[in-house]
Amino acid sequence: MFPDDIQTLARQVIEAAVARGLTIATAESCTGGLVAGALTAIAGSSAVVERGFVTYSNAAKTELLGVPADLIETVGAVSEPVARAMADGALVHSRAGVSVSVTGIAGPGGGSADKPVGLVHFAANGPSGMVHVERRFGDIGRDEVRLASVRVALGLLLDRIGA
Image 1: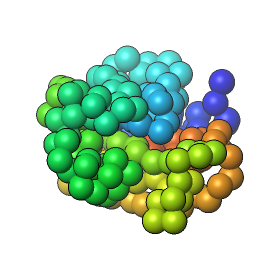
Image 2 (image 1 turned 90 degrees about the vertical axis):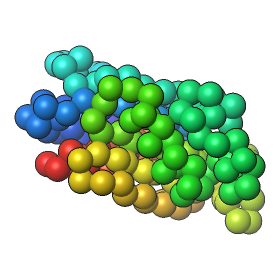
Image 3 (image 1 turned 90 degrees about the horizontal axis):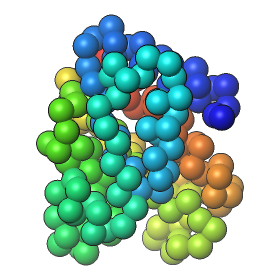
């Protein structure tokens, strides 16, 4: 279902989480659950995948993850502060020990001069703290932006798990 490199990364995340006794929560917007999908495609993932939040709308980010509505209104959903709040909210609203969030503009529309198509913000939180990453993939196509985002998110999870 997923490209080989994503399957390999997902397997590494699952194995690392099992080895460290950590559970995982995802908070996804533009990837629409693909990060959780990649993880749960791996046999044995039920031991460590605690839950996934698909928070495509701003209201969902607020209602499910506790992202302040005024924060979204001030800085926009596709921003570092919202990505960080999503990663925090995923931990607060789950029993997970590590989380990753993804919020971006996959395209083909929806971009602007300040926030172009292909801009994606990520955050991950876990025992080694919070990290934020911004990627500008460019207008490479909706599917490619989403798959590239899954790769980054899995890499961040691996980093926060401490593998």
